[in-house]
Length: 101
Image (cartoon, rainbow, N blue to C red):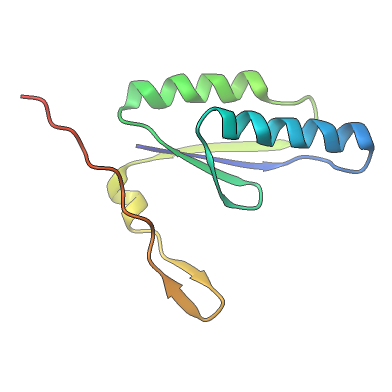
């Protein structure tokens, strides 16, 4: 399970820039990685784990700005096609899925 956080926060004033930087740092502290500017992703081993991180992000949401969160499965993540420039770059390997019998 992957959690994507998309955000557009105002950065006009110094205090807004500080809030923007703080939000980014808090996402990184919670294990998110920057996929693109204002797009952060995190792998979660289960749906329950993704709910925990979703609630953490909800607590971090600043007063101003737009934030969208989406959860997708490993299979859906594997179907993402990324283009940087004219080359196609494969996604990093997804973490191994643990199976418990």
